[in-house]
Image 1 (cartoon, rainbow, N blue to C red):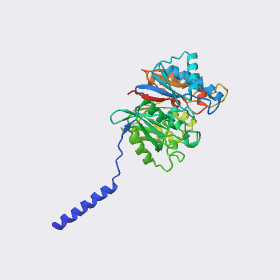
Image 2: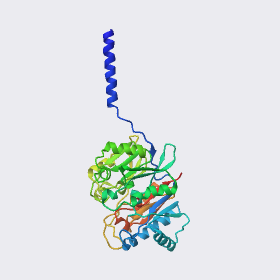
Image 3: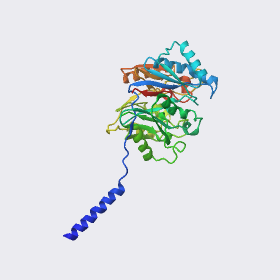
Image 4: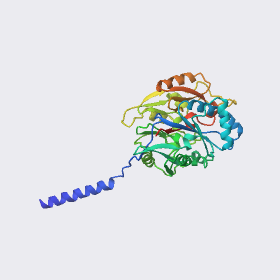
Length: 368
């Protein structure tokens, strides 16, 4: 009997050691990413300037930024990043010419390389006490494809000016805001091609990326598409073709349009098979591409345009439009998703020629 007890004790001890050896550290969420539809204090914009790409470049885009600002000021505050005082004064004159009220607009003078605020701007999250802070993720010009050093300083500058705590994650991960979609309820969706890419995060595994997003975004459920590195400057950001409208619904395109938009068939299958944090299959709301190829105001053909890259403000939803027969249909579909907000179209023909639309150039600041 004694011998049997000794053997049992040894076996139990070995099992406990095995359990200890096989136990991996549990990653806890320390922050949560608020869903875009949560009430905003305001929206951040970086205004196009001529110091990087020239005056014609700037002129082709000014009207789009004026239109975005004109709609946003009726919904919330607008924080505009201007390159310098000369640019600030020029922007003010543009807004006045279009009779845009300046009451809810403030300006920050920061030098920038570009205007993709979604990708390089501040990421506002809440800590466990519910307090807002800014996460400053690394930004390297979509894998060192463009100049980026000025833009990479923007989140910390904003945090300093606002007196908000900043969490420096530059050494943790290169993470552009448009590369991931978070539903605010524990699920993240993104393309590996723009995150687990040697030009962003060399050597990083999927498990390591998930641990980082769990800790800093508060997500535990992941919808990973492979994406296509080299397809465009972003290496295929998710927010051009798939968005969360809530924790149970994804806004995207039909399968033929997704293929036209260069989404791989295997990724289309993964997207349509996705489940939320509770293991429930998503419902899908289908928005078409533009019917025709988009032509810029200066005559460049940039192919069919997506309407999925919209932005949710407090009282409005800003949707890219292209002077296309499908504009009205897309607006009606998106209006049905957000019945308590007014859906408005913003002419994005020239912006689309630069690789993005409205969601790409905006960044929300949640209300305290």
